Image (cartoon, rainbow, N blue to C red; front, top):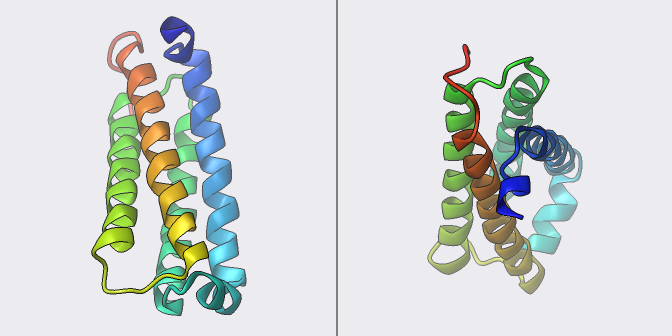
Length: 135
């Protein structure tokens, strides 16, 4: 099972999935800022900033996923971004300067778990890539 999960084909699918969720969440943060701020108890400026960041991140993920040979250096950057996102979500959840609603706490918790899992799957796949791919 671990061999399958760390295969290059699964890695590419995981990166495409990551890109698609980045586009969806980024668009939601930008298009529904006021509603999400109310529902989640997160500042509107945080949602706008993260919306822009998510769309930039998604563009990087699309670049990686669509490359003929997946570039390890950019994959490493993607993994680092995911780990940073998970850590930032955790900080906001437990010690941040914001007071998220119960829905906001659940939203942040889902980010912590799902983004850390994506980083792990990407790491497992990146380690099995043959040689160093050109960026």
